[in-house]
Amino acid sequence: MSTSTHSSADAVRTSSTVTDRLVEANARYAADFTDPGMDARPVLGVAVVACMDARLDLHAALGLELGDCHTIRNAGGVVTDDVIRSLTISQRALGTRSVVLIHHTGCGLESLTEEFRHELEMEVGQRPAWAVESFRDVDQDVRQSMQRVRTSPFLLHSGDVRGFVFDVTTGLLREIDPATDSAEGRADQA
Image 1 (cartoon, one colour):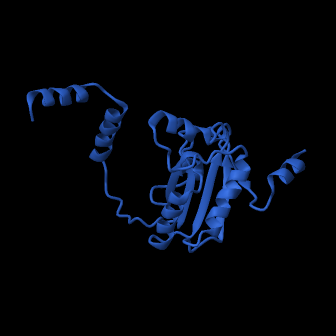
Image 2 (image 1 turned 120 degrees about the horizontal axis):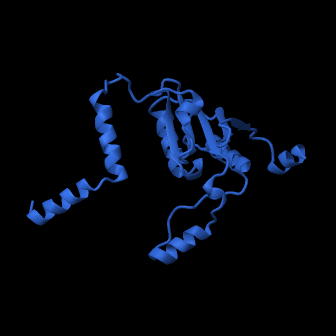
């Protein structure tokens, strides 16, 4: 390694970034780590699909321990082709049978539109291949996600698919009835 390259690498390492702090935390964690002797099969046979929002501590909110579930997270907790891919592997190769979908109140996808993709295309000169999957009605989006899981031909187990909205201010889950039309739900609440 040349002197200038070595100096640049040292300069990067001496300025503390968030990633540096995470790596340091991992070193402390690894110092006391003991292999729990688990395999990749979730003990509870469940896969949880949730939003990536930093306010959701899924293990604490659901009373889960290491090894209990597979956790699949993305923006909005939306069931996309990649989520179906992960659920398919989770079920077919690793034995899960239940799917829990968790969206939440105050999701950032409620304020985005597909215009976001157009703006990206204008900025970088290439249209993203993925959809934003924004939504206005969180309950209806949970229903849509449940429907996508239940109708996927790749999934072996679609009988135990339940959807919830996590309230970021109270920490409570509210279950979404897959059969309720959002207009009916609003009429019932009036």
